[in-house]
Length: 208
Image (cartoon, rainbow, N blue to C red; front, side):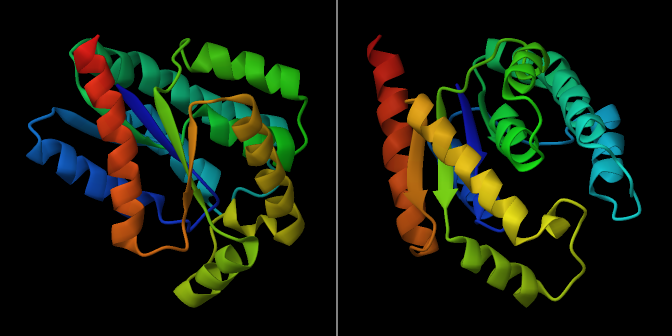
């Protein structure tokens, strides 16, 4: 089973992925937690380049293709073997992020973005995608509260994030695999909602 997590930056995805992974392990499931970009030696090098604020002048197309290159490595060398062995794979971002951030946010042609997403994603489709929904003003508050420098993507600004959010809303309307979670609820309430949805998916697979 492939479970992906999406959302704007600082929506709390990482916290919820850890909680879900721990819960699945308690239920005796084999679990693999991954993140994008990264997860392979090549992917981690690409991640450094993509998030480095010194990577100035990077074109939108170059950014998208680097994300896609990292994804291709992750899918073929890590994801597919894990899924084939029956492992539950939890991924912090997948190709929906590219559609929202590079397609809508950077305004690259959506038909091209989707075609390359399919290629880099190796034809994989998540069984369920959780979108942790928090308001844009909350994203900006959390970034400011962190008190550290923003990475290159986080430095996109208010208008950029508005376009990204519009992209996610389009994806959620198009694909039934999305489950929208209110990210302003408590950590425990969010986890319970996610676990309820995952349990239903796991039970359905057992029945079939």
